[in-house]
Image 1 (cartoon, rainbow, N blue to C red):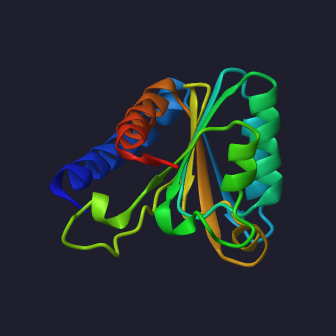
Image 2: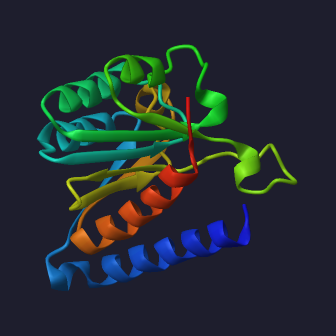
Length: 181
């Protein structure tokens, strides 16, 4: 990861820590979900299904058909949906990227050498969603069935416009650098 990327990630972590620290005083809603069996997929589905204007997804792996269908449905009801994935995930079995693209959802990819030209093996390892500029989901949870049903994973959902703005800014920076196919 290049210095700009490290600084951006460090800045996001500082923003998350500050918001979580003041959350109870400022009325910020924070929920934690754990898998397997802890309702992670359902919580993310509820955010997507409840979105009225925009869903931004930055994800390393995305093979979960339920979440893919929910994004397509959101797109079809007029919600702006944008997805960024790791370059190496574009041809994986059960990948949702082609289904999304065929439905008209813009999908872009980040290659490892975009973070550091000297090291092509870098991964686009983000796992976050931004919903209606007002809420964020983030954690270890890739949008895969295995993450929901088999792996020990976590997601934190934070309803906070300031935090959503930080993540939205990072998403925008990545979107500009990412490759459309």
